Length: 429
Image 1 (spheres, rainbow, N blue to C red):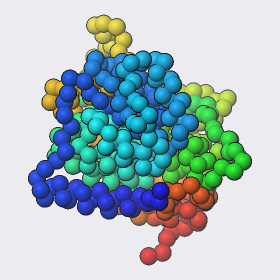
Image 2 (tube, rainbow, N blue to C red):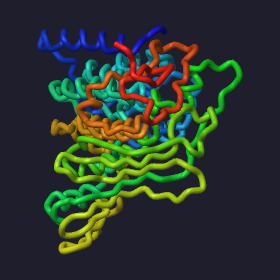
Image 3 (cartoon, rainbow, N blue to C red):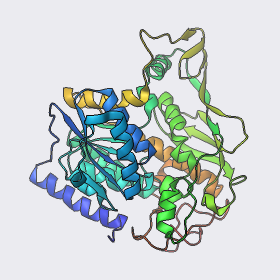
Image 4 (cartoon, rainbow, N blue to C red):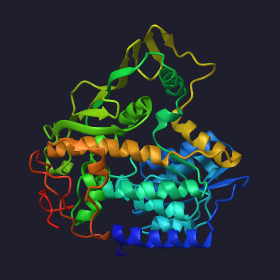
């Protein structure tokens, strides 16, 4: 199939305009049993499907879609083992290919789980909203400003259509974080004056290229290491901690400056992304937050957040020190936030007390992209300049074939406004 991301945008915009003009929307029915479609059958998608079933009664996995048949088959086998007859996916509702997501949306599902590589998320989210489905979408939700703009437009429509949307920023569904940050908002440590957020760890998996494999297939299977598929690890992984900073600060940063590089993972097998970043985010009130992330084997791990106020300090997770010292104790067994985010989505669908995190996660996502671009370019990056940037990193065509790999970013040469492939200099109008 020969698709382009620009085709998705044009087609979806026309469909949306028609729906608004006619005054009709495709509402998802709230049935006794909710039928869930899984789009993206990798490890995270399979885990999300299990978590969804574990979090609520009356859930059936109804349809599955993935670009690759072997990924779908592996996911199906795992789900069959772990959730048994709650998996109701016959061969007729297993879909593969670049258009698999469209077929899942048309299969009679009430809810969709969007878990394909992040570069595909804007098109999948937009299509799900246009189809009137409730949505769980993994983070990140885009890899570039063009994708963020598409997600924000679809987010606005999802609110109009009264759809529930939950994102995979599971700390927002962890009772420890929820109560601690509410106390920070209630002035438990006074005015926030600075903070630090980290995701430093060792390396992750990679997929070795096989003989005869096209550029497109290899890059998608090895999606962590290409900016057009993952956004780089500051976007794909560190978004969790940046999201906590935005949550605590009640808004997104307005500018960022920083640095990063490719020091350990230098082999072409690791694509072209960086392996470390250090970013200073500045918020509208002038407060600056240090962000640091690293994926290098043999290095010190640190996944945390910490904030300093005029009256004390907090890790944002479960404790406060200062004038109002406090530690979270809870009133029952620990809650698994990966399950709880699905529980909260299902409760919202069934109760009609809508939850919609689409705009919120898109803003945290663009914050992470701002950090990436500050390091890639070596420049001070502002929110408005980035949001309006002429940057669309997606391939011109979604077909199996040649896909050039952009060079590793070069601070001082790389520009925000740049073509997806080839050189990284300022593109000409």
